[in-house]
Amino acid sequence: MTLEQSETLSQSEVVVQGIKQMILDGDLAAGQKLPTEKDLAPRLGVSRGSLREGVRALCSMGVLETRHGAGMYVTSLDPSLLLAPMGFVVDLQHESRAADIHAVRRTLEIEAVGRAALRITDAEIEQADSILAEAEEAIGRTDHETVIACDERFHRLIANASGNPVLAALIEAISSRTITDRMRRATSDEHADLRSAGEHRAVLAALASGDPDVARIRMAGHLLDVEHSV
Image 1: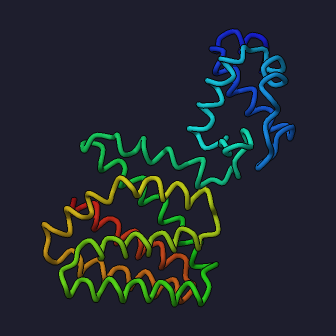
Image 2 (image 1 turned 90 degrees about the horizontal axis):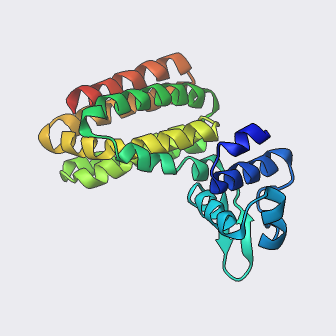
Image 3 (image 1 turned 45 degrees about the vertical axis):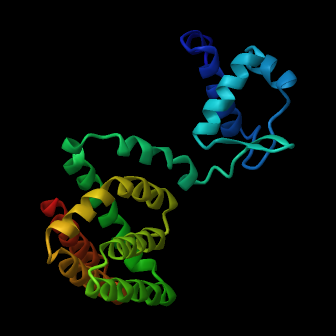
């Protein structure tokens, strides 16, 4: 961070940027304890009060965490942790932006399923089949909540099977905003759950065959149906 850049930032922002740079430079690593306030404040050129404000901001971002009785530590810096706040931002979007959010979800999940088709294991295929069987049994009871929960688990399994933790974390954050829309669709369209069940089975068949192109097509068709129904 240059002197010119630091002069345009508040003191707490200087802390955020300073600790970020320490992590990037390797001076701080995931799971490592932060230096004491007495040492860190002068290193960053800020007061202890500003240091605490910046540290609180980094805690809310998932970069730092307080360990009771032990002090302040860098978190694991796992993408799922760092990208989780995006779900809050997505939740704040007005209903008029729902189509935009669904479009982003579709883009991400099409990429994820294509990657998953090349990487998914037999155990994951078996797990996915079990999830879909549970959903199909719930459809018979008109248990929409269980159906939606199984839907989430199925899509999460695919995202994780993509082998890209950043992609999986983004999908998790975006999907949180679409749950209400999916529940509304399920309760207002009596055939929605059955259609989704068939589409999910088609996606799983493509994954089991290891064909990324067919998997992408099946996922795109499924998510477009969801979008057009909400």
